[in-house]
Length: 124
Image (cartoon, rainbow, N blue to C red):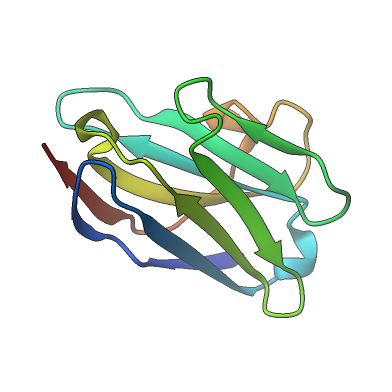
């Protein structure tokens, strides 16, 4: 089992920035990739970004490309989501998730362990 703890959420005005962190512990050797998802009120959870623990390829939803950056620190087993140029529509609870294997990093079903979520609120 992989335990995930997110931090870094908060409130910011439109155009501002936030950096989310997700620390993984437990059986982290079983984790192949990490993803960020978000869920806005009244909406389904949606993919935001993903990265594998090895290699350099990253994956982004079209809605955040050019504004958000996912990165990782393998030694700390921590994944980050740098969010710039935030918009009110980015308001959501952000979750990090761990996938033991797979290839469709955009799909929620690929991920087996989830954090508790952190709230991000962007005001206009």
